[in-house]
Length: 249
Image (cartoon, rainbow, N blue to C red; front, side, top):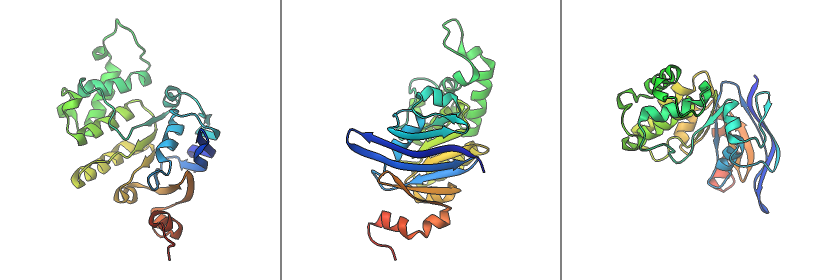
């Protein structure tokens, strides 16, 4: 199976402190791949390297046939990769609909022009309507985003993420802070929006990870110590030791 995203011997240091220490990782086309690890393992740093927020100290990152190493975030996004963040990142005073429209503009070829009204762009409206239907927020399309519940704000952020049209999606702890019922709804939503796409997800909730992922990679102190199916990772003595801090038997 072809790789949608590939990291080769990726390192990242801040001054003399090495955070990512030679990561090799392959995300297969069309799979849902989870990255797990203890706090401080370097998961968010890894996401920031892939998405262009941080420069790579050494190594290479490829998005299919393109080398995206140290390219700017907007270039990587336009190459087909989109991501969400741990902290909800929305325009709170704008409507739910307009948040999604903003996410769709550049991917549909629209650039800033003061004489154009976004509301008159048919292609933008059609994509926004489709996404609002998929994330279950059509009935709240005119609400200010800041008035949504926390779970709905997370759903809206997923909508804005996929509005850009990228088919490789990075989600960073999408269920953090949710109740059990909200998590179940979020998992169902993630399944829907990632159908036919490639998904990479960082998540602390192991129930979510084992429910969603086709494969799992375990990151510990900036190194991938194991990659495998959920069952392989569940039964790995090395993974148990990394999480429990004691020798697993």
